Image 1 (tube, helix red, strand yellow):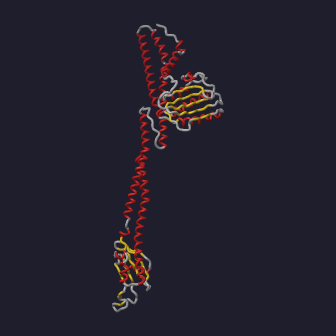
Image 2 (cartoon, helix red, strand yellow; image 1 turned 90 degrees about the vertical axis):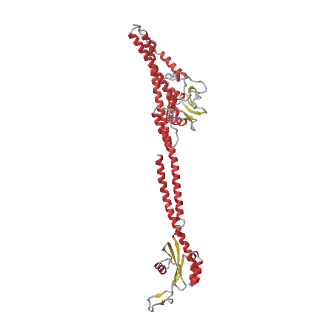
Image 3 (cartoon, rainbow, N blue to C red; image 1 turned 30 degrees about the vertical axis):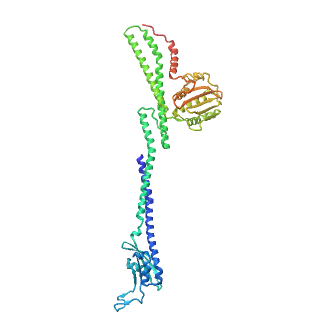
Length: 489
């Protein structure tokens, strides 16, 4: 692509140089020719006053010597004879007569050209050996037509033309070289982002989930890089979701495995009992391995996820445009603040949009129609805070609402929406907190860290405490509590 752009620029520049340089060179040649013959005309005009006064050879020779052309031997004067000057040399009329014409200087013009100029008294150019001659007719007092001949060498006609062509050629070459350099730089500006995009695509295909593309270069390539980063973030999010789901499903197997182990322990002795206990132990080890592997892969995937980043202000404005139509239908007043300038955060665009949709969807689902709400974005030095506030009834138990699968504070809620928001915040080292808003209802504060540090106050528990809570819920499963151990054989 880079070489193709250079070739196109070379072709265009060469065509432009040829289109302008060739006509300009021809104009310069014509100007040099006109300059040479204009100078010859001035030399011929200089002898005209003398011819109009006298045709004496000595006087004419002195006048010719005073001109540059005459001094250089490039001027000749042709004065025709009168009828009285003709003498019959052979004694017969018209047989052979001396014309009595006056010829001064070295003539290079052909006789037919002289006759033509005398017959039609107009200045004319004629060819001559090594150049051209200017034939300038001059009327004498006797009514005769004298012809002043000025010889113009070919070197004088082309004087400076070769230099002009060389200068034009040099300018053309400089333009071509300069255009190639500019095209090469433009090609690099286009090719390098494309190569980075291709390299990131190969890296992502090889399983390097942290591969992202800087949003640089032309607008089209920036758009492609943004789309690629969004796609990669979606892939990372899907993988993380699937792996955590696998871990969750595997974790749920521990309760029935515990019952099986207890029942197997009561089987007594014997080959069948030993084989059953060994199979249960092997199954428990395999489940533990699946859980550890899935959790480790999930952590690596989440750690690689937010490298692309997005503009929080742009995403908030976009999602608020979407929800504002529904808010208008339900008579809700919406307030939006803090989105007047770009705010970059290390969160994928799709994940931030999903988190905002989850929070705003909760406002619409769990507050009455006509309830006002607001979204504020605060850009700090090391963190960005997104506040979603409403004027609804609020949440009675914020801690329970943040627990996955048990929101408790709102009827019919699973808590998965807040869990999505929590995952987005914790992927950057931030957290989610629920409190009372200035509007009188619920305020959900999403703390997104810009440098990987935790929010300064009220640190939330990490994965292990949540897993212990899940284990506690599983151990409190009614089916597990009511299932008695199998009787011993």
